[in-house]
Image (cartoon, rainbow, N blue to C red; front, side):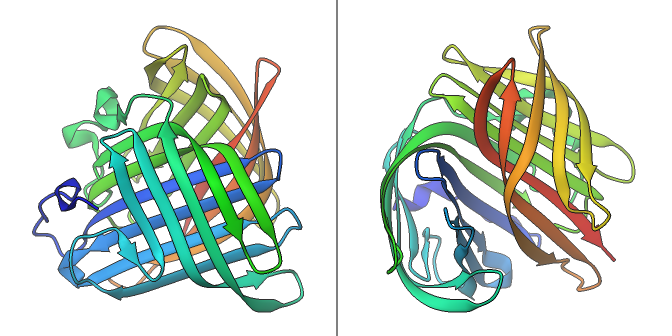
Length: 303
């Protein structure tokens, strides 16, 4: 792993740098979310890896260790860049908890994947609303995203899978406080090797900040506005959503989404006074009669 991928640390106590991969294998109904976050100024390195399985169970682990050096390897999870902004290797070996509605058991998991880029890297600063003074001060201000194909294998002790899927990777850095936004929505879908979308929408007390892109015909086109409606039940569980994406070339994209599976991840604010819950969901997206799949992430803050 090349350490020059990691940016110089900022001075803020809660400066972070995070790398993440998501995938969904349609043929096997298998979804994966993997992330490593460096927090050098609080001497912490965090990771999580969650696999939403075909039988409805979740196999996952989330942990942290003292920060030692700026490498993307911790608690059995590792990310290695094989080609600049093009190819990555993802691996995990270790224990995970397998959770069903009724019980939890420990599983030995081995995961090997290769990520091959399908799109160019998209820099969120290509979107006007994501620039400079518009960014909320405690949210990572630098963000890159890229569409790709992931292939490899997974063993959970009970199951063996050969994986061939679409997905994406992201890379962000800056000062991060998950409890700073009132709400945060990240929507990412892959319809095919040549058609995908990625949108993030941040709501603060002062404004709404939106950014993202539509990947189509080999090009990333920035999104300039998102009209989003979210439907939830009485327990605030997101069930579906619809949105219209307005891109920088004057096109509108009407998208419908329905939630298929969910994992909740909890984040405490730096001052310990509030909690943010991130609903990490797998969603089915529909655009112009065409179905795709990807992650729909909803942050809800609780005081």
